[in-house]
Image 1 (tube, rainbow, N blue to C red):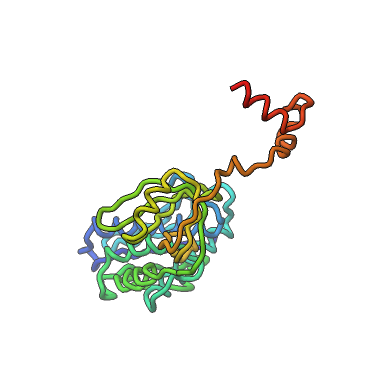
Image 2: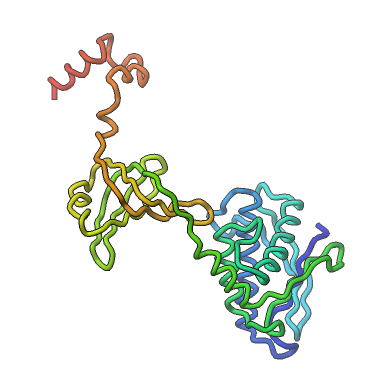
Length: 273
């Protein structure tokens, strides 16, 4: 691979804060991992599932290190890592200039970017220089400061809201500080917080453990993931199993009823219980 990343860690030559510099390098490598997940559209469940980056050159005193991919993640290619390196540098440059999640970055990558930039100073002399190298030549560079953390953090506070409804099983009500219940979504199995007001408390508590449809204002993050719903109305729905027509039993197992009609089979097993 001809693409490398050269990282000059914060601090004047011979006077760099070793702990802060290593923390910045650790977060930079974590950022590369998140961007790799994004490029491949496949999230790694463990850090050792990602591509490892080798240190190909170190210059002491000024803490300059050059990184290149070593053992590639399954499914990754050198072209993948070229894209990861380029997206890292262009994204950090974007974050230095303005609020927003950079193109090619996910919310998780932006959060790691905040952690990285938070260990840096506001001045360029106290920032981290990242250079994109191709065949040993610098093709792009950026000085990352805490300003990038401020811009990324501002973007991460943005939420998208819409009116809609969610169906699932209602559980666990909390009345401390804010009124909130949990809704286990029928379609995805994820748990979504449901907030409600004092006048709705009785209706919510009476619906615990039931299949419900909650309508209201839905909040999503920048990756379009559900963050919660502010309840406007609640409707208790029939249990899903109870809504399955008896005739559907034949589709599950043609021999299940032993030749009886589905209705006769259900009457028989109910009488035996």
